[in-house]
Amino acid sequence: MSDFISRGFRGRRQTGEVSARLPPGQYLERGFPVLSAGPTPHTPLDKWDFSVVGSVEAPKRWTWDEFRALPRESVTADIHCVTKWSKFDTHWEGVSVDTLLGEVVSEADYVAAFSDGGYTTNLPREHVTDGKAWVVYLYEGEPIPPEHGGPARLLVPHLYFWKSAKWVRGLRLMDEDEPGFWETLGYHNLGDPWKEQRYTGD
Amino acid sequence: MMESRLDGNAAGGILGAIFPFDMTTAIATCAGCGLTDPIGAFMAYVSAIGTVVRCPRCDNALMRLTNVRGHYWMDTRGMRMLRISEGR
Amino acid sequence: MEGTALHRRLIWQLGEVVSTRTETARARSLTLAMPEWPGHQSGQHVDVRLTAADGYRAERSYSIASPPEDAPNVTVTVERLENGEVSPYLVDEVQTGDRVELRGPIGGYFVWEARLGGPLFLVGGGSGIVPLMAMLRHRRAARSAVPTRLLYSARSQDEVIYRHELEDLTHGDEMLQVIYTLTRQQPPGWTGYHRRIDTDLLGEAAWPAQDYARAYICGPTPFVETAAASLVALGYPPARIKTERFGPTGGG
Image (cartoon, rainbow over all chains, first blue to last red; front, top):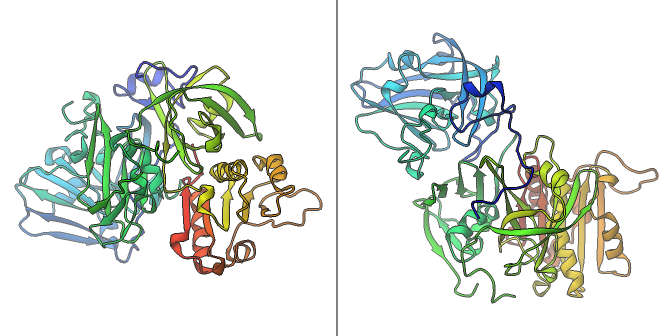
């Protein structure tokens, strides 16, 4: 049965000269698919906050206004979903995770991002520092739509996009790694698309 | 694209591949709020990355399912009880 | 039929397309011969899986349009979605003789069979008519006289799927009534509803709550949620309302 091919089926994919820019097994997508694990949260901005907690000397918290006052960076990046679509040159603006972690003192090696609705994802601290990760609130110059993770989401473009947690509300510093929502269900603990680390054991 | 909340029936495909009986009529109890109903009456979020069955009342995830490299992974910590009829 | 229901895991089966039928400009029915089909109930669906030559796969769910009496042939009606990945292939590319991989039948919760009785209130939006049509086809095959109302919302008369068959079903069957609402465009002289469903419209179309009707609602998610909330507001017990949301755009 795994040998069956649907005559003439190609899907929406495009290939060609862009393929050198695509990680192994990925296809270029024109749209911006929405994959959901739960209902879209609608936290009002006057109730929203962002926290850095866990294995820190003192936790840090920002309200929406305080968060928006932090130094803002522009990021243009290709993004790669583990379900095989990639999108080039997505443009975001937000706060570098370096800025956020710079406000706490911690020796912890691991980070978990946590979101409204209960989603979590885990990352080694070195994969969200040195200019590799942001908490963004603008996409293509506009506030991120709720279905794409607004008001704010994590952006870690060098890893598969399930690590870029939508509706992010904070980072928890951890001394021990703790797999998150999809990592406990067979997805790779790190998720480097260039090494095609999609699933546990890859 | 808006809300991608579907009915529990939508999880019937992956559940039917795992269980040799119709899970959409099995009665589940939410560990979050105690809601007890056939799985068909719960909510399903289905995408290529995985399927999540949630409580329509408290949004708790009863079941999280993926199909990865020849295995099905299933986390049911959010489901306190499952009642399946002998008949069908 | 009941005894053969699912006591085995669902597996992917290959069916052969034995006939196709263009229903509207965007919708086509495919009838597949399924050699290992265990039978099904009206309201159930199948998962369809397409595989490209390089191994790329896409999967979508489609409601079964045919009644259980047609088994082992199974008909699905697919509506082409703009930017869809699977539906354009099924509507525009698949030919008689092609094989299609599918898994089913799925979902014993959203089903109706004649022995369940009624009255029956079926509410369909766009391609949400498909599983409801399986119910109506079964109702006819079973020679059921269950009092039935179908409220069908479509954008225009041209987009009404199964229009002539629905006319045929109602002719000579006083116990079946079809009520349309055509939301974008109406033919000249149209005296029927011409707006999106709301509580008032449902209040006029639905069986009164005290009739204790069984309601089945199918279509795009916002449509289903509006209809279900309206029926609850009209006094229908939630347990008498079954829903099949097709997602934000109604399919794939």
